[in-house]
Amino acid sequence: MDDPELPALRWEAQQGELISYWPYHQAVVRAEGRYIKIFGPGGAVVPAERCAQMEVLLDAGNFTTPRILRQSSQADVIVFSAMPGPTLNELGRVEAAVCDEAFARAWEKWSRAWVAELNGSHSPAARGALDSLPLRSAEWEATKVCRRVDDWLRHNENVPELSSQRAVLRAAAEQVAMNLLRTAPDPVVWAHGDLYDKQIIVPDGDIPPGLLDFDSTARHEAARDLAGLDVHLELHLRNNRMTPARYLTAHTQVLAVAEELRVSPARFDAYSEAIWLRLALSPLPGRFSLAIGVLAERAERS
Image 1 (cartoon, helix red, strand yellow):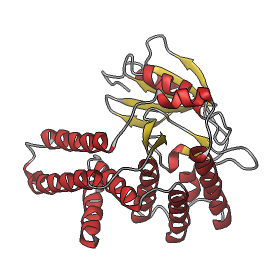
Image 2: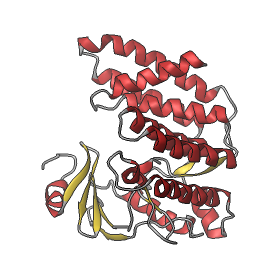
Image 3: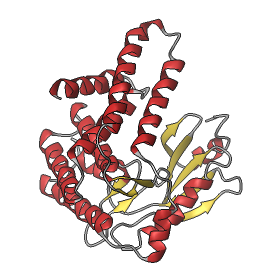
Image 4: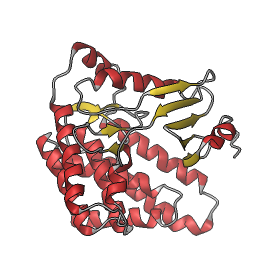
């Protein structure tokens, strides 16, 4: 496979199975006992730094993280160790061979660890690692979302059949930005930055849950991670990849964590809508209409 922005992809893709690919940006290959993450030249520098910071920050033992096995001299490849256990996404699939009780226990295990991590005290070294992470304010989030919408509009400006979608998208972006900025923000905490059920591994026994992919980790409102996780659960439900009963189990756990962390419902809803808007920009078939439909439903209820 060739990608001019990811020159390492041709070789690394031969080492295993390509499981994630974002053209011109990054890719992930699953190989025996390891995962290979491919970036553009120099693109692995910040992700490697974030991993090192997480080794310090997550020192309380609430979560386990993959080890870096290899980094390329061109800073375009990081090889991570595999971690035991299924992801919450794998456990929640309709076809998953796991009982509802085991599914519920897995989510309870994650929720206890997440609350303990965010409510726990930090060592001086961990506090230093947290303070060194980038700050992602509500203003930053609103600007980022609007910029992505502008990029989508520019990319599709010459596609006549998308003319009606452009107007809908502009209106949705204005509403999302307003909702992010109209209420006072919650306190800033450590945030994974891209939390969803594929990023959480839950092994059996007493092994702590695992977390993957710290490229976007930052200081953010707790609502950002929890809303992102919850939106993906609803996406699975609406796409018939998760049963209503299992959706309710997982959704209830997310809301319980939000309550324990004193997340404002208004902030949770604002970030949830921002994430639905991000999903509307996905090139996946049907994603735009689904996400915009959800935003329209929410606007009618408000």
